Length: 393
Image (cartoon, rainbow, N blue to C red; front, top):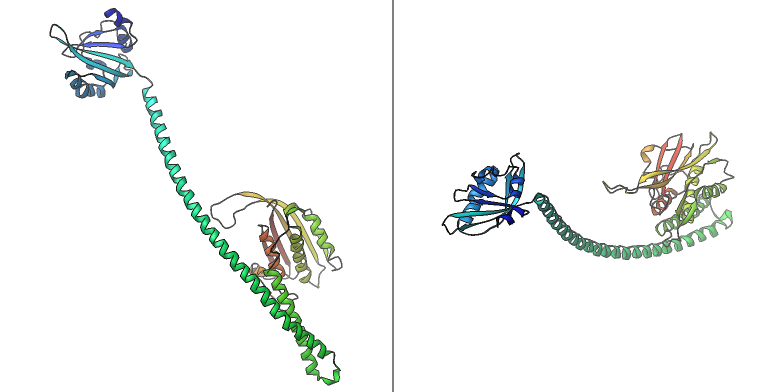
């Protein structure tokens, strides 16, 4: 039997009743770094760390004293060199025929156990976190579905309200246009009557009625255009803004203004709307030019990177935009009104031509292209309008 023990690939140790070592096989001696026979007669404590020594006395020894098998207990041995050796311990106490009790220990080094335990613990924690994340995802998905249902209800309600307002606007526009048309027609007929039938004041009054009714009809028409602005858009396409701007400039060739058009980017957008946008901007520059200097309108463009999130805080997604700058040397305005000029029917000077709808429509077109429009100006020195239009929708 002892010959078999010398060949065992594990440590075998025999202790007497005093916990003194009476036998070690070669594997145990080599594991602990002692020469053969050096540990005989020594207490088991000399090869245990302090913590394992306490554990052996309080847990292992009482267990085997009761004649029970101590199975797969974890201990840390301390070799002669001071190196700590983690082992799994199986132990049992038996009484020999002589009546003397011996404790038999089987020691199996497990150098990687801590690593395995840590890996198992990490795997367990990862699984628990994954389960928690899955629960969170399920809860978020439920919240998202509720949010989508609420959004759908709100959108349905808004569509109904929008349809009602659009119908209401058309009815009001028609009901107002018809009496104004009759007033205008009647005033025109009366104005064409023999002039000696009317006093000077009466003739002036008739002309005033014609002008006022014509202006009011045009105002109603323009407001209708703004609030029912192309509800069904044509398909977006690739638009060369240089070509589009040159086409717009050609309409003002007889205005006595020099237009300097630089190279502009190509974007994906709605060609008719973009043509209307450029028309409003150039029309504004022409209407508000100075008479004491030769008017020049400069149009330039380049590609810039901008955050697509305009109002959401702490959200960033940069994308390429076409930056179009239209600058003139016209009459300009007080820069504190740079945002008000885009309001509906907003006119800084009531005596200037137009009804104040051009820049409102321009802003609407820019926003439909998910872009930005802003203005900077100085009285007597001109105005600069800057557009930011995404290259792709």
